Amino acid sequence: MQSAEAKFNRNSLLLALRLYSSAVRDMEQTILLPSLLRDVPSEEVWDCEAAEEACGDLYGYYLMLKAIRNTAESGLVSMDDRKAKNNAALIKTLEPLLDTDPEALFRFHLKGLFSVMSDLTKKTQSLTEKYMDIIGVTN
Amino acid sequence: MQITDSSNQKHSLLTAMNRFVGAVDNMDRTVMVPSLLRDVPPDHGDDPKAEGTARGAADMYGSYVLLKSIRNDMEWGVPQGEGRRKVGGADGEEADLETQFHFHLNGLHAVLSKLTRKANTLTNRYKEEIGC
Image (cartoon, rainbow over all chains, first blue to last red; front, side):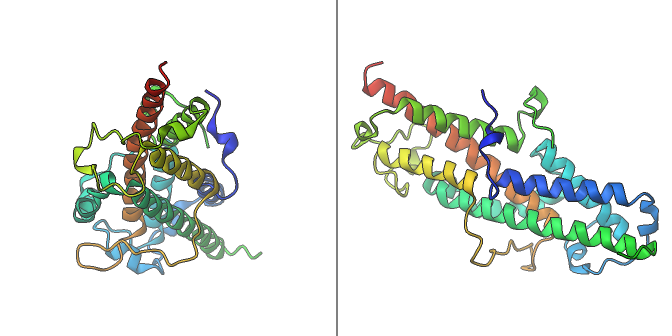
């Protein structure tokens, strides 16, 4: 079967995922000493408050962004228990739509994923820039 | 990004996307006279509770148009103009990005799997209609 990749254009989800991967690769190639990010407070504290594990510093954030990239690339959809618990109530609410209005559910998740990938890409780029500030590299 | 379809990626979103697009393409190539699907009742074999309530799927022709529209959304994207609906956490505050990512990834995977089955069912039903 011909790869569907050839058909995805610049607005496609595939491209959004690719842009994110690219931003994370850039981050990995720039951040040669990730330990320098330890204890540097994350400005986006709210992102971490909703998560139970400690990611209050940029190092935790760095690891999270890489983990998300790995999931996006492998695409394996199993979630750990914590995340499943957080989403359980909402998943239950949306379940009936799978049968009655799959189109609406599809558009909801597609838009959501686009939005999340866009936010994650920007945050990845911010983190890379912050690291460059830390090591004193000026553009 | 590696695009492979090895067996240990059969649960991947990319595989689900490719399968769906493939199923709709196959449907598109098979259904040469879409109007033959008009007034053919939709097949609710796997979800009886959807009968009579599925929006825009009063007949198989409706399903056909819907599936093509969703395939186009995947290829061309959807307008991001209106504000993103926030995914709330247990106590109402916005869930962190990681949780949202997993929520939408899983959700999209589930919808695409279901729609892929629908597209395949429609293709087979059409073939029955034309006596293949």
